[in-house]
Figure 1: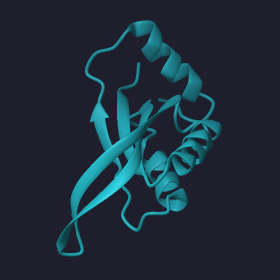
Figure 2 (figure 1 turned 180 degrees about the vertical axis):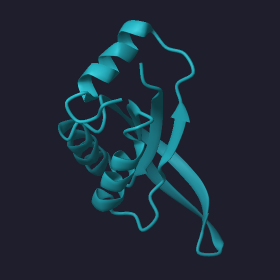
Figure 3 (figure 1 turned 180 degrees about the horizontal axis):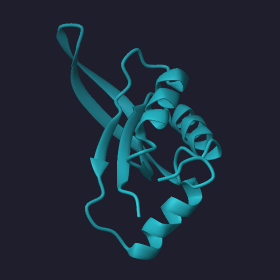
Figure 4 (figure 1 turned 90 degrees about the vertical axis):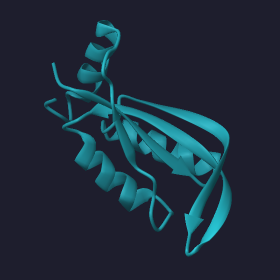
Length: 110
């Protein structure tokens, strides 16, 4: 069984997030994408503290699938520097993890 990741990506709007999430699932780079609306981000940008209302994507994929997913996000995302952070899934419900693997197996070999 492969190793699994949750990848976090922030988007400038819910519409952008839904479009990006749908494209990642369609390309079988993600088994599932949760769209979490209405987050506020506070960050350093161009030498000052900035704030933005954003939508967060929680993307489930495999470790092996991270690079193709990262490249797709970079190509499709409107931000100059998109947030793309992968966190390992240390433990999970085995049937769910098998489902992730099966959902991506047409595109990735784990």
